[in-house]
Image (cartoon, rainbow, N blue to C red; front, side, top):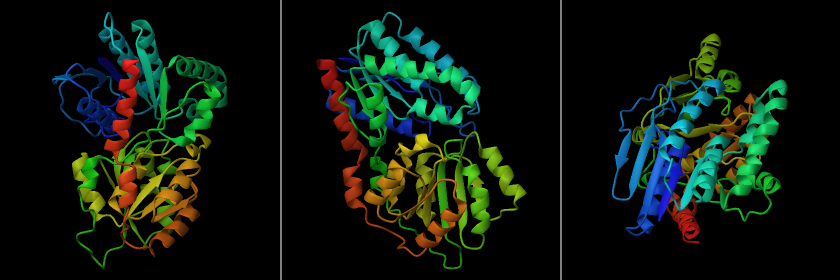
Amino acid sequence: MRILILSFYYPPDLCAGSFRVKALEQALCNMADENLYIDIITTMPNRYNSFAVDVDEVEKTQNTSITRVNLPSHKSGMLDQSLAFATYAKKVLHETNNKEWDVVVATSSRLMTAVLGQKIATKTKAHLYLDIRDLFTDTMADILNKNISTILMPVFRWLEKRTFLKADRINLVSEGFLSHAMAVSPKHDYRLFTNGIDEEFLKIDFTKQNKETSSLPLIVYAGNMGEGQGLHNILPKALKLLDGKVRFRLLGDGGKRNQLEDAFKKENISNVELLNPIPRKELFAQYQEADILFLHLNDYSAFHKVLPSKIFEYAATGKPILAGVAGYAADFLNKEVEGSQVFSPCDEVGMVHATNNILSLDSHFNRDEFCKKFARNTIMQKMAIDILQLGEG
C-alpha cells in the first residue's frame, strides 16, 4: 500500500500540525508490513522566522520519503501566507504528477491543504482521508472585513463543501467541529481523533526543582503570538493589574509579537519576559520552572469550537492551567483537567480574578488518568488503523 500525506508543517517545525503528522507517520510505520510506503510532502521549517533549523530537503527511510518545499520568507500576514502556500501547492502538484497512491491523507488547518489533497486524490483515483484541524471558513468569517468577506466567503464555503463531499473519510480534531461539519456534509460518519500527549511528555517529572520562596509565582506561555491567540488584546492590561503578584514568561513568535512587545514598553510593564521560540526538548525545563501555565484564544465565535493542542501538553505537566477560552475548550478543561481556572477571552478583569483563584490551588495535580486517556500514541494508532482500512477497501 502507498500513502501520500500532505502537511504544511513537519518536524523540526514547532506547531501542533507538525507533531501530529510525525506521530501519525510513526503509528502507520509501526503497524504496517514491508509493503507499506509513505510519501510525505511538507515544507522547510517556516512556522517562526526566529526559529531557523538546518534540515535536508529530502529524507528517505525504509518506509518513508519526506520532501520539503522551500518557501519564500513570510511573517504570518494573510497575503504572504497565501503566496507561501501557492509555492507549496505548485511543488506538490509537480511532485505528484504521474504518480499513484492508494490513500491521500491531508491534515489541514487551512482549508487549502484539504483542497489540494482532494485534487490529487481525484486525479490519481485514490481514497481521500481528511484530517481537519481547524474550521477555516468559521475563522475567516470572523477576521475578514465585511467587504472582503462578501467576495471571498462564498468561494471558501463552496470549496469546503466540495472538498468534504469528495472525501471518503473525515476526522475532526475537536468534537466542537461536529455541528459545523454535519451542516456542510451530513453524509459522513465523522471520526474524532483528537490531539494528544506525546510520549516524551509522559517520561518527565515536571515538579518544580528550585522553589524560591522570595520570587513571585511564574506564569509561562509557549506558542504562537498571532491574531488567533489574541495575547495583544489582554496581556498588556492584565499584566499591569497583576504587577507585584506574578511574573510572566512568554516564549514564541508570530504576527502580533511586535505589537505585543510595543504595548509592554508603552505601558512600562516590567513583570514579563518575552523570549524567542526554543526547541521542544528545551521547553521541558521552562515547564518545570513554571508555577502556572497560560493559554488564551482571541474572542472569536469560531474559537468556541476548537480544542487547542496546547491543553494536552500543559495537562501532562500536572501544573495549574490558567486559560482564557470559551465554548468547547472551556467545557473540556472544566470537565477533564483538574486544576484549571477558566476565564472569558480578552477579559483582563476576569483573568486577574482567575489568577487570584489559581494562586490558592495546589502546585501539582495528579492527571495520570487524563494522560492515559489522551496518550497520542493510542489516538494515532486508532487513526492509523482507520487509514489502513480505507486503503484496503
